[in-house]
Image 1 (cartoon, one colour):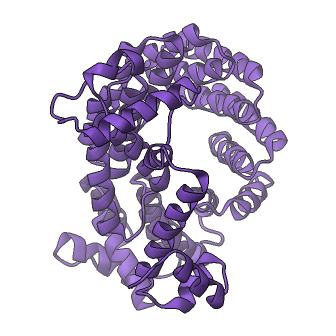
Image 2 (cartoon, helix red, strand yellow):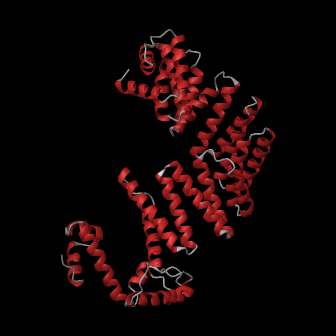
Length: 448
């Protein structure tokens, strides 16, 4: 047993719940293995000293428990090791099923399909068959084989029902509907979700009812049936046990409110999303929630609120980049939005508030330069340009030639500074020859 695998075992044991650890210790004692004195050390000793089938059985139990705890990568490593000594054992088929499940959860879908399909050809119990069909269907779904996914998921729902595993039967029906939804067959998806809803109601599966309502809401939204979509999603929010699912439902509901023209309701929904994201403490969710709220404020002409909200998002983006070393997705588009909001706040004045449909910003001391920019802004609006860009404002009043020269000068200076005035990489970045770059430096009067 390699040192790396010993570390995986040790970490795996430490990730178990006390109850799972007790069950594992009980199995080790049943197998008459040396368990030592200390709790974690005893299980590590037992796993290291176990041989053949006993070792495989303990590893199988550990891997299964890690799947339950969402430690999927460690589970896969441990279950793969357990497979080596499982041939002919009582737990062999169940181990193969868990290994197939671990492959699915780690995104190794074709391997999962192969092992689960082989299992179905063996003599297995009905309960095991249900689980295999379900995860086999999900694996087909994830690789885009929708025909096989639908066939297998229907089989899973039927088998679960026969075994009186009603919650899992409803889940398999939901997954069948998801396949249709993914294909854009929203009417068929709604039909399946409706069937699943009635089933869950008969079986009094409250949590399933709310989950299915959310899926119905998403399908209704795609079909443009906004009012029933809002009703379905509002009902689904009675279950807020999973904050991530709740955030997603609130996001869709806020979007529907916006489409329905219910700006106040949309704002409440976006604010609730923001609170939930803060509660979870997930920076990515917090950034996304703030972005959506900020854009909503902007659309609603609440520019001061938009600026404050988007500034919070900007600060979180900086922290995210410092912690991860990567830029948060969509940062370029975000900066453009923030720039527009800043410009609108900056140029607001009472004399133009009626024309622009915005309120004045009391903290801003209007001067002659801003007055001229505002006049130009109104001219652009009169020309039908609803959202003048920063460039339209910056170069207003100049001829096209002068504006072009000014832009080229600013841009070339920016790239030169980025490469510390090294002409080679600068010309390569700009897509011009070095001699051509010198021509621009002379023409635009650019000096270091």
